[in-house]
Image (cartoon, rainbow, N blue to C red):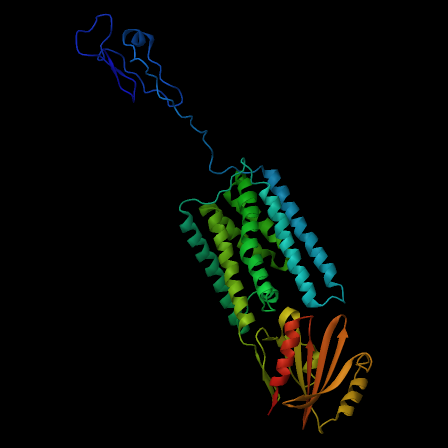
Length: 432
């Protein structure tokens, strides 16, 4: 009786004389190990001479999955069309934003809320378009090597580059100077605006833009060569931001992200994008939540609330700079505060201030069309005029003082925080 080896199905003769008609194992030709995809069937002479034990059957062989490439790129023309349509969606939203900005009755704070909604809508629409391309036939190249290492490299490169640029710009201006767009987004300092800014800059932008421009566009252009694919995706990335003055900046940044993608995959380029925007977002948040600038104009002083920053002298019109000592500040949602000190040989009365308003071109600031009343401030009596100009609330406070007169003009920009802050500033005013 013969015995069987269950692993290779080879036949071992039982002890005893061997029939001359049956070749011995030593004389038998060597047999190759059968492929895993097909079950082994003993040769007919083996089956006839050495039948298997009763009830024996070869074990089932599991079907082997078809080999799948780790990266399956989309068709080049489909990726290009997707990129063009995505840029068109962004351009359409920018056009709507421009039209809203032309509406003079729309307060800047309201316009900013519309802009946030439009931006999130663009990322949502483009994100849905991108997801429709992630099919079983198109697999994203998430990581080459250890994902944790790729993420660490991306965060280090993106965050480090952003930090270096931030330090250079801040050194040139003399103060911490992050991206003004991110500062404006969260300038109200409340939770909804801060969350919206983080969602746009640190989540939506790295996720959607990296999948679109690196995972789909760059990967689909690999047949042109790695360098060409990197620069083509960088060009699309630059045009996507719709900022002609910064095309070179975005193209270089896109090329760096593309290079990281070709080395480590999407996890690395996304981490770099997140690190770059994250540093700017943290810097913007520190500006918004840090104590405001100090007001000091010809003896008039106050500490401004958080979110108020000193404006550059170049931002002021020449008519103000020649009128006397002047200082200007940027506030939440585009609000602005301008303080002017004018030499005055005598202390004007409330009637003197009204006559001056009438003769200085403030023809719309008249009783019945504006609110004019007297204030009792710690710095002294003052006159406040509140009016709406082109849909925006403007408050002017005239504070007379011996030898000089102070004028504070606050453009509210529709910001509740700005109006509240201005009331605090007036209570904090001191004259030395």
